[in-house]
Amino acid sequence: MKKIAVLTLSSLLLLSTHLLIMSTRSDVIVPYEWIVPGAYAKYIGGSFSLFYPNYTLIDFSPEGIEAFLEWTVLERVGDSVLLNLTFFVNGTGNIVYTESVPDGKVDILDIATVAKAFGTEAYEWEFDPNADVTEDQKVDIMDIATVAKAYGTTQDDPKYNPNADIAPEEKREVSRHVVHRKTLLLDIDVYSRDTFLNGKPLGKTCFWMEPYADVGDKVVLYGLPPEEINGTVRKVDDEWGGWWGWPDITTYDVFVFQIDPFAGFRSYFDWNTGMAMKINLLGSWPVNPDGDYSVGFPNGTEYVITRFASTPLGTELNVGTAADYPMVLNFTNVQLGPP
Image (cartoon, rainbow, N blue to C red):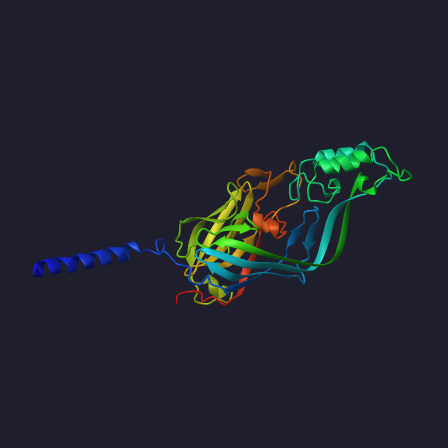
């Protein structure tokens, strides 16, 4: 019996040693105990562009702009979290928009304007807000019917409808003070980070990532397939947190570089909790889909970009960008770093 007991103890010691060796930081399963009601984080950022469904683009001046993103966990049931997210931008913006200029008659130009955008919805490249005569964020048969009903009329005709007089168009530009605030209630799976807004999937979010990610690990930052933004952990850094006012915080650096859609940026996450220390907002960019955007490299290689990186969440927040806007963690009530 004694011999059996010794063997059992030795086996346990060997097993414990094996488990200690195998439990590298990439293999640790973290229960995300910090994601509880009341958990809060605020991120501050710099210059932004906003893009609205009516195809208005607002570029903010870098001087005097206030921009932040903050989230609060409202409730958690099992692995499901209800997150309150607010995005706020305040500053002087250069507003560029396209406006229809009535010419006093409803003719073939007005029909052609609606026909060109027929079947599109807001945020789609071909969507034309001026063709959205019924103003329901889509161009459909009702818009065609409205213009057709007034076809051939002029301002003196009782059947004339100014809403159907949508051509030609002119590009307008004005500078003024703008305050933008967007609040969303998001349903997020704690572990997969799959996110939903009113039942609509937004892909993965980047408010937190898998803790203990190690160099070489492949992770999905955010997005919906096949447009997911993927990254690779480039380094684990004990100094980065101190640069931004978070001393003694170990972070891991996720680097992304994609050509089509084009994106090149770094995001940082706390190594112990997985919370994002620096996130990047990507959204829609109002450009002609037939246009070219070239990127040249010193070796002579030139890439022609036909579309831009974006995420459904960034689009919902009205972020408009061809690159990315980094936002850095400014405040949180979550205990970062080791306990």
